Length: 401
Image (cartoon, rainbow, N blue to C red; front, side):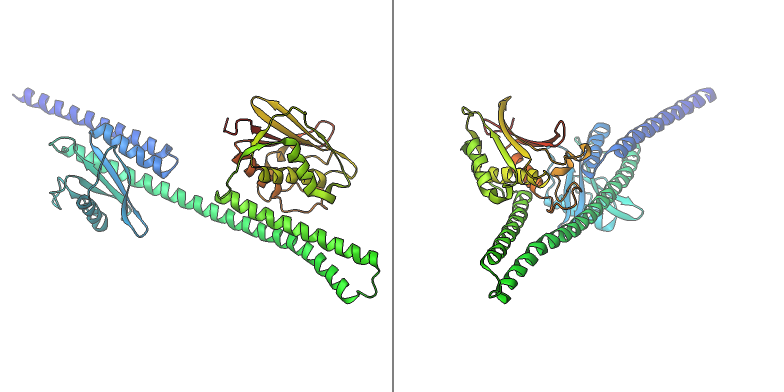
């Protein structure tokens, strides 16, 4: 009898050790999964999945939201939380005490609600619902409590990471706004000063100025006014692109007409450069919003003129390939460093040479936004023997490839 009793105790001890080992292994697996989860939504999904696999139970996680109490952030598929059940979850959250089925508080509920507690602060509520009539054993409840503690830590970590990310975004936004204000204030002030100076001279010294001088002042004021108008237009275009308010009115358009219209708009801004256009006579019509694409071509040509020496050749050519129309702008300017080839399409980014070139760094960013709205692409390349090639690719069917 003694030997039998000792053997029974030994078997119970071995089973307890195995159960503890399995519990430790399970908790380790969950901890590893949660640690590797990059964001809050992934953490919540992992907790729901693990509870379903280990306990064969449906689960729901509720987190507080500003002004709306608790809201369901993750749940087992087809899980429905009724209003009376959510009231029990709210009680568990506010009182920081377990409630619902299998507890002494509101035991008539169909779900057990476990506060997710971290150092005395409740970050949410975990609800577990059985699929059958029997409830969790003592060992399973202990394991579920451990799960809840791990989930609470993971949720807090993910929330802190999101807060840090938002803080970084806010800091970057503030820096961007400062850069924008500095850039815009300079680029707005320059043409305004020139316009004001020309008008003041015409007003105060009208009798002393000859006809050619007056004409030069008028032309200078007109040019600066056009520059100011382009700047404001670029800012408005960037706002429309970022807000998603840009709407395309696509119709079959002629590439030759597109380039010709852009050259006409540029006018005297390109008179000191030679623009050579090569578009095959049988080039097909391309679906596009003509007015927006004219703005893209104007931006690219104006950019090429800014960074190219006077009397240099800027080549514009069109070709077909892989169901797309390709339009290239090749100059012999100062070129773009290889590390800046992709960054030149970022807002307010400008290659810091030559120093005399003005601008806000919006033209290429706007062009990229318009081209991508057409399901096309735009990129820059270093041209052999010096210069830059800007390439636009647009699908011939008007749809995304």
